[in-house]
Length: 402
Image 1 (cartoon, helix red, strand yellow):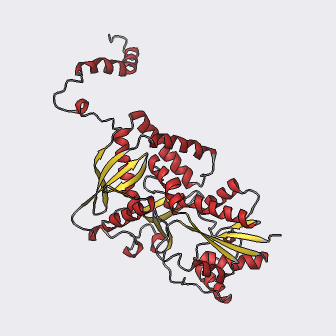
Image 2: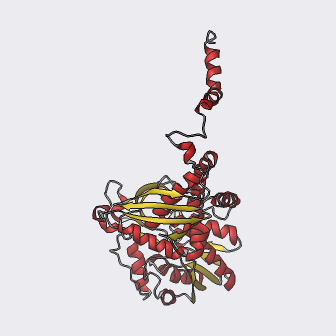
Image 3: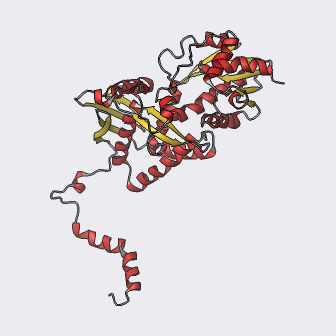
């Protein structure tokens, strides 16, 4: 018999219905946990009272913004982790720290179980429950969307109305959205047909590139050990830096992605993502990597970028493999120091200048002009050795060749 359940609470329609449903089904105490990872303005206003009105006996709000950026987002930035070439993993990166905070509260209050509002079709159920399994395997897991009979938004609204629980949600809500400091995602509505162009009312953090300023804007980002630390020469803490970049890049229409992705559960889904500041930081980090990492390390970074992105997307943060890759990422980050200028212009972010005290670029070697450090005749021997396998193969196929 369950005495106390801790639910991951967002204040949205789903979790507002989950609290009274859990109380009815299990006749137990329900505690809500809210993780602040930089949701949209006003989204968390009055959320504690809202949780209590839904039937929670307590609501814990945890400010996770700084550790979210420092421990999850920035390592992914160093690795260059991008899922299916374009998705900067905004939702996937936030889930582990949200679930971790939920588990910590569950342990503090002596809960018997944890619950989440993820549907049985999505990736997030795997991400949350993967954390539960790694950090608190003794707790029962309740996933109402896999249990209750309600299947639509209208049914959830009717359920709340029957229990006299107030909600700001309505049946006319068009899109399902998830927001944090790094990005905002949009699903549902017209987006469910991939032949439909995204309506302009989908986008929240970015202006249309067509309406962006005609004049470009350059931003200079300074990095220390793979972490962005300055913007246009001004030292900024992680939260302020990302928020400022979101505003700057959003005004230029930077960071929009319309993607049909492969979900972990096997189906395709379409989402529109806005990651304005993150798009700029990824462009800057890639440009910095070009001058501080040698060829083998660059190739290794490309390999782990895909592996790390898949691992994050699949909800495998608290695993031995992630720890091993993270150690490699931190070693790489020690070389990532310098400044990059990124130009923002009508939906594009393009690095135009880069410098580093650890740069491997040497103009005296790379110049097309006269130089005194490179003897071009030395290339002949290198090429003969480099092409030796091809030469031997040709000799075997054509014995008459000298």
